[in-house]
Image (cartoon, rainbow, N blue to C red; front, side):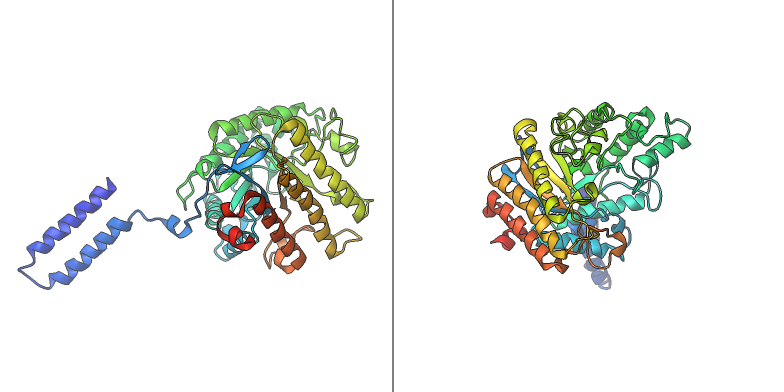
Amino acid sequence: MKRDLHSHLILRLLALYRKTMGGNGVLYPILGFASCVAFIYMSFGDLKLSSLHKGLSLSFVERNGSHFILDGKPLYVNGWNSYWLTAHSMDENSRGRVSAMLQAGAKMGLTVCRTWAFNDGGYDALQISPGQFDERVFQALDYVIAEASRHGIRLLLSLVNNLQAYGGKTQYVKWAWQEGIGLSSSNDSFFFDPSIRKYFKNYVLTVLTRKNTITGIEYRNDPTIFAWELINEPHCMSDPSGDTLQDWIEEMTGFIKSIDKNHLLTIGLEGFYGPKSPKKSAVNPGEWASTLGSDFVRNSNITNVDFTSVHIYPDHWFHDLGFEEKKRYVSKWVRSHIEDCDRELKKPVMFTEYGLSNQNKDFQASQREQFYRTILDIIYKSAKKKGSGVGALVWQFLVEGMEEYNDDFGLVPWETPSIHKLTIQQSCRLARIQGLNQQTGNLKQLCS
């Protein structure tokens, strides 16, 4: 209909132009200009800001057994975490950091970035209160997705935090308590309180059906999104049996899949084994790890969970081990989870966070390269054998001038040549397994 109106405008202007051909010549340039304006409007009137953020042509990532599949071929992932992308997309003065990070990731052959798609309550909150959203912050998330697409980067978007940073489950419990409908002030009531479950479902529905103001694409229909992560590092210590968390995961994963059947879904686990697991003593970093209410195998075996997630932080888990001992433990930890997915779960495993703290008393900068290589070598060997170890995301990468967003694990990759080189090497090793002829853009050129 809009195109018909545009055409009608052109015809009217041309008719008026012919009527004046034998009359006042002053009208000629005016009408000529008007015709040009109308023509431009007709041709480009529907052009939106999306043309400025036209992304690369991407397909949805799928799963076949223990492999990711992209355009009919196995996909292996080398990627990173930058949790701060939305926060830095709210201001024109800081958006350059988002573009710079995504561009730098693409130039290193990285293909997936994990970032937060939540900020509940507090400063610059996306969700101000249950069901109330700040459009300004949502448009910042729109920008992150559009900009990632422009650079050929896919996003793993996390939907809520188990920790208090950026609100997390604590904020949901506070909201219910403040409204006088909460069953308990315990943070774990996030998982069992029906009112809080309803809050979270409403949030999920709003995010998944959000229409990007830049691209015009609903999030659930956008292949720039690699996958959804249900919750970052879930614990429910009030029920160490794991039943409460298991019930919540089953309900929420089913709810997400009822809205979005395009995208993969993972939980966001750290990978600890539960109290009934035979690996709780042999592989867990301590007895405490089996009391957190989560269980890697049991939770990941839920039908709607497409791939498993594991974190690697020996610095947080051990305080009396030296660097070489930590490396040996990490090798066992990574291999154990690949074995679980190869033999029992038959699903891909992604190591969605790994890092080495610079606060260790024996820390040396060269240790990071050794630590990263230990993990990446095991994943490469698994991928080469067509195993379930399909990728890893380092925690975390930043650009210059972001000290306030850094922690003891973050780094600017190009400021550490050994890490920069290793990152590119892993990207290319995985790309060669897939076949360089299947690659496009930076990756093909980088690895040729």
